[in-house]
Image 1: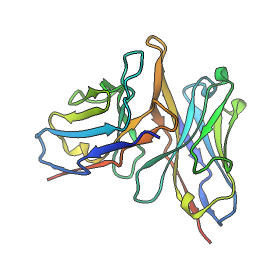
Image 2: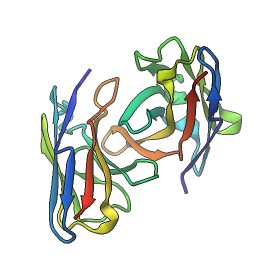
Image 3: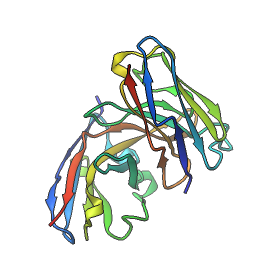
Length: 126
Length: 112
């Protein structure tokens, strides 16, 4: 069974740093694109960033709102993905979800968000 | 960025009745491979979002067949042919065609 178990949320002051973890089970995370999506309190879903598969060199992309502050990291030995968040702002307060992207090798398609972690709440406040 | 616009934003439905949600994109989501890159997600109260429909009309594993997706290009529809109580929550459309992936505002389905 595919599972994404998240940890690492909490309260942090503006300007501080926090690292979120996403431990994968039931599949090899290095074979998959892994994204992060966030949801501010009472708001909709916002894409944060992407780490492509090991085959694609673990290249990354980020939303403009977090670029140069957030970094997606991988640890294949732990089958895990991380979101390193620096220079946090109050606007970064949200539940952060780790997501595995789906693919279909038969059709050469992919990109849907087929598995989600349980979410981790990050509160940025003084 | 591609802008996704959903309607309605609130949808009260009587159990057993049909329901539909519209999603429009600011650019065509029809790729050169013939697939429409449009997904639908449901976020039930207190839960993480879950995939319902991908590539416009493909039901995800385990999704009941009362859910269906249709449309092409810039206009898409999610249809629930007989709403059940367990279908309450917020429905989002999303385009994965271009970076950044973008979501609609969400449609809150409630039971009358």
